Length: 627
Ligand SMILES: [Fe+2]
Image 1 (cartoon, rainbow, N blue to C red):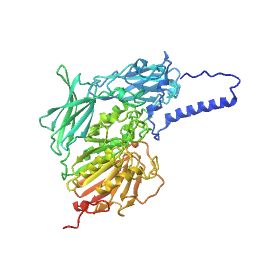
Image 2: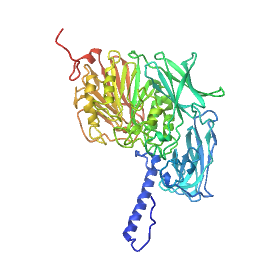
Image 3: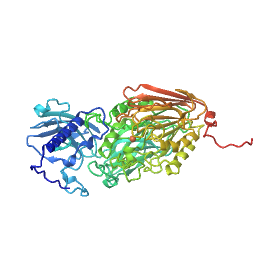
């Protein structure tokens, strides 16, 4: 669309001038506000950049220099880079973008772009900082030195100085390229439970296509002979994305994803593993060495510790992307879990994983952030709106919360033992636990394909061996006091559909994310607490406890003004839940804050097998009077 030139004629009134002035002020305020805000605003920082509007104003006296030029010379997959900036006309709106690949001019624009004129730049940077960040004198001196933490993302990097803020970017200077030694290196392993209890899957990212190198995992019991298992190779293309920005400015080559299935594991045993790629010349490229503890046998009586949270996202330790405005608690949660890792057996991140929102580069950064956790314990994910939702693509909700990803990133980058990873529901066993993971972004209502799965999953728990039956979904299909978006009580339609299943199969706890806080209810059925106990539950299982644990890291949600009898504890802070099964009759739930790792809420469940079998309202198997 061509824009008519403004004409300064007599008709240009004083009123018009006032409107223009107001608009200018508004734009300036918006830019300044986004620049300095740190409270958490829930807007993907990369989406604030109007990269398509960028113009070239290269200035001979402006310069950007980055060093060291060669990264990862000692095998590192992450390194700090210093960037020296000089500008002849510095302004507080000047910002520094990190591009990867280093060449970001219009020659890389896809021909399928439906814009009439090719923009100068058609891909978003992978991150950015304002030049005066930690350089208070920049506006006076025109000189700044910034440190960026780069991770190996399979392509080289360059740093570009822009003036004009994020709204009207003007490119002043571009740095030299910097690059990791081996751009294809196998990186960011994440473990997940396989389809069977004695199977661990390892998924990782590399730059090696299957025709360049054969991927495999070398693994075995710690200290014993190691064997090699093959791995598959998957990728996807721009055309696999469903909408902008994933199809447009957010697109970035994702590399290749490899998954290996490590089978016939001994229960509760320590294994070591490393990732390999065999090149055509016969030599091998190796990752670092990692280790994990295999899962317990289903029903096994041993200490089992499970961490559950939703909505964590990512943040940049170097202060990029407005540091923690987007997911302010993300690094705290990550660090707290790393600190406690030897007391955690398995992690569930129940949707809203990376909040990349169609900016593909952010998934690498997320997998790098969680690598210390996901490479050691199974990192099981559920699908949320930020992974799946795009209008007109079969998502149950109609927003574009995934920024056009339509589930492809989450489904390819992480393994889950689903029959069909595009339908993100699955069951998994962990010792005395049986988990049924639902996909709130696909229809769960009675009669739906997913409803049948949920019933089958709940029914398949042998409660004598697996007493702890856990239901998980991203959106609150049960109970929340939050008035945010979903009304006072979450998603009542979900509750209407599913509560009969929770009751019939005597689900102990239902976990949800999406609402960014912590809340737990009494054991409840049809909006009524089934007992008055607050923290030590015992005896017959006649209601399900609902726990919202969506405070993993994204900006917080108020708990809402509604007071109910069923809400027993609420906290609008960052945190996660830890479940500890001591044995078949004793379970502990603890809510820990991400800021200090301390317990702020807890309850216990004590019971015997007969308490699960006991007949309760709407939860009895049919009987006859015959004896
Ligand atoms: Fe969500």
